[in-house]
Image 1: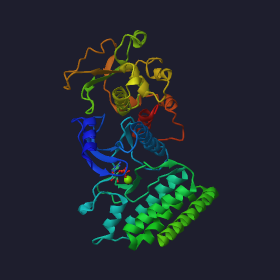
Image 2 (image 1 turned 90 degrees about the vertical axis):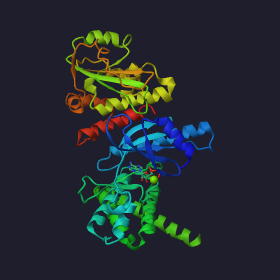
Image 3 (image 1 turned 120 degrees about the vertical axis):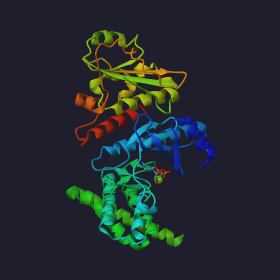
Image 4 (image 1 turned 90 degrees about the horizontal axis):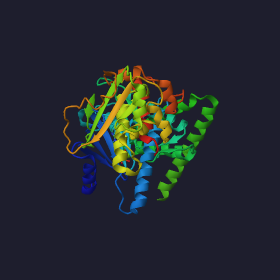
Length: 263
Length: 178
Ligand SMILES: Nc1ncnc2c1ncn2[C@@H]1O[C@H](COP(=O)(O)OP(=O)(O)O)[C@@H](O)[C@H]1O
Ligand SMILES: [Mg+2]
């Protein structure tokens, strides 16, 4: 992580609000904080920062950062209104400087298996003496599929649906069931494009195949099962749309396969 | 009265108090626009502590990073609570409508960052009973229907828990005018 980006963030927050960097992506740096930006609550909070890009003209860069920060925040607020859909809570938005404060989701998996995103969760059941086909895995993947179904049915796409952008949260310490949350809507959009939906499904399928190839077939089937459940709630209209999306998904998959044979 | 500072803005002291059974609402209303340095807010339009502080946070963000917009802290508080960019709309959060439950918010820039003993006299103009500023107290007496209208939350949004209603308000406040 670049020193001057960190210095900028620390200066912005002042020493009164210490944060720890946890992830750096192409567009954003993500931090955790134990302090809430405006409430006396302590706990764990996420700060997502989009630093300036040097290769862009400063005024264009400022406008673009503002646009993307607002875009992600606005999407989160719209998605919150969809019943059953789980996304992080927006705490604050400083669009001028490119900062978003979000609720922290997930936890550390037991036995050092890492943060509870879908990727690590599946790893946990694939290693040691875990059962990769146990009912918890099946239930969780169906719920993930339902989340994507809710997102797509309501006219939204994620844009970067990898297994790290799905975080699992347990309601209680001893709870065995997990609730998936979709995070990282930096590339998300309001759209009814069948193509974008097909690509969302394809991206997740690829992510599962590449990290959990031995079980990918069953996993993807469960995902699609949960996904379909949502569409099927809406009778014939749902069935028609579901066919459209799954058909396009297969086409996208086929294109991907052709590309990989050529390339 | 609660006196606090946000960690990110150590040089601003924020004092907030809730008064009930206020007897001089007319007098306050007459003074609210001109001579009072602090904001007078109709408490029946405040559902949660989070809603209130989320707006105050936004006031300080706007004040620090978008200087053009900021008029006075008191009018800015009403503006940031409101879900609309219209100043006239934001007046609804003030004393435009009769209410004897009033929240006072004072934001003061200070040279140091220490919390001194709360200055209980800043709101002494308000003649009422000081009440505890907490979620339960606020949500119970809140006019949720009017809030729904102001924040454009339609009836398809039926939160199961109070914190979900509060979350919708914070969402609107954080994105207002952007
Ligand atoms: N709300 C959140 N709760 C917990 N962890 C989060 C949250 N948001 C982001 N993270 C962590 O930070 C990482 C990067 O955040 P993300 O929003 O995906 O940004 P990027 O666009 O850089 O991928 C995530 O993969 C996740 O581990
Ligand atoms: Mg990500």
